[in-house]
Length: 231
Ligand code: SF4
Image (cartoon, protein in one colour):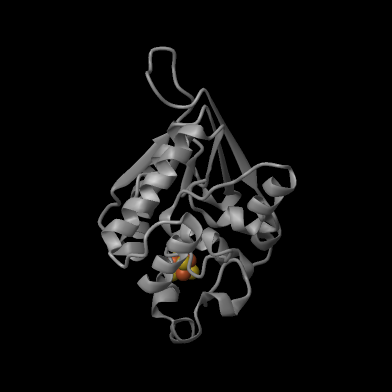
């Protein structure tokens, strides 16, 4: 599973566990939080509430590796564990930053490469996203993408920009054999019908408001008790 908040919203991990399926997070932050049995505390940086010592203890306890606070080594341990799982997964499930109606393209930005692995290595890719992420044309994505990456991580562009427009073609060497898109309403149409609530659907999940909110920075994301924490 590539990181995204809609899956937290619909409690996909619990539903999959109830159906007898094992769901493994592939984003390093979400993977760390999953190991801890916790929920993300930030929509962009899920494990921002943990310090390096806590991550080191978690990896030592849960993955049975030597205790180390060497960040590069911790990343390497996480990557090695996750990489094995990508090749064993039956289905890759991901979110979507923008879905383009014109071309059927699913756009997914990330910095770790886990999104690309989740969406290309398993034989089936299922993308799940809220209906507010659908934009009309490909050209509409350009300003949104610039706004998202600059506001989320201060980057002009993320390391990976994945544009998925369907399953592997007959002459292509890699990619999934099946791609499915699930569009989630879950109250969004109701919010759209409400003049005041409608503007909440403009949120592109950049997380900038959390980084600047004096309340969030004091109490952290878990204190809000909701999937989407912060102001
Ligand atoms: S409300 Fe605005 S600043 Fe906050 S996550 Fe959404 S788009 Fe970003």
